[in-house]
Image (cartoon, rainbow over the protein chains, first blue to last red):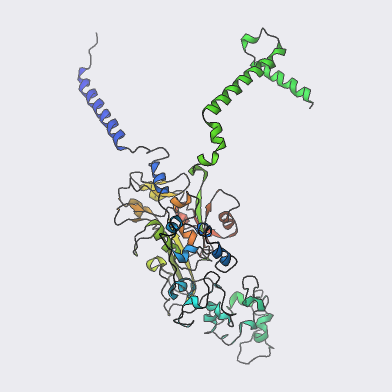
Length: 245
Length: 279
């Protein structure tokens, strides 16, 4: 009969206890759904998705306020969500009488979007708050749900403030926009569908800058045929600020 | 091929499947036996189907049609050419997600880039762009300037998830990087690891928080709060895999870039018309 290795017995017992302790601790400590979908608690997905919403979404507003829907559709504020101005209104949807959404009346709120800022994309309607009827509330002239202009803009700068700002400090300050742009009358009232034309060839610039042009002698002249080779004038010179490098 | 020929071929194919105990029977009886076994099988299946409530489920499919994260893969696109920097998205995000109302904690924020003719690009985001931007210094000779909204990029290969020691942050099956608030130990590793600075430690809860793409909204069929309020539709929310959606159209027609592509994080926030200076 071979000699039995009794001295291993305490070790086996110790390891068994350790493994049992580990298994029990693991069963106690690891959350229930951990590992179901990956190295995380699958229950967390439901926990996050069960959070309350604050913004109800525009469709919820129009379930009741169909008159505002009519007024807004087709206007410049068509796609603008109601809650941009009226604030988060999910509570109002649940209990219309308990909670009333806010309605900003102050001038500063409109200026958040429509105040002039050079970083804004060109063509976005912007005003200079200090010059544009200071002190007057925007709503006294503009209806926010259908913000038509109270009168047809006379100056291009009413909308193209960024271009006007640059042009007025350039050598082209005295030039009317229509000197170079062919602007249909309808562009003033329907700018999104009736576009102003841009020059398409150097002949527009040649009217003043060609060697034989009938214009002031102080205007710099070039040989339009030779100058710039195959490039167009505005490939190198910015027409609204021609002296820029 | 004539129909009779097809039948003959099928019979030939079926011959090897005849069980050995059936060899004594003649071949013409085979189809009848198969017909009967088939009938029994179908009857059993129908009984099981009805018994397990399959019919009930199929009749009232709408009620049992639970949101399945496996069916979605969310992403967002941002049109730099449309952003007016009004900061309504920042405001809406804070209100929707109860982000602390101070100038240190944001899930999304708007940066203003001012690229001068000479020198370094200036980037600022006072209070996340919520209250507008101050005038640009008159001495700066502006070459280009624009706004860039930022948020968690919901990377397909997120560094923040890799470093989390407890598995409290993860990529959900629908492609959103989320934080398990109950399981986070607040060690801040993920805040360090995020190359986009999109995470913060909640000052009271002491857990890491971040943009969830408004997971509680999108799972209910709504769009994220920032997308809902964006006045110029500069933010486009959608799914990568779904064709004929505004997101797919945007990805097809715009010059698309992602932030810090050299990190191989595979971001799922796509920028359209972004300047090379944007990082």
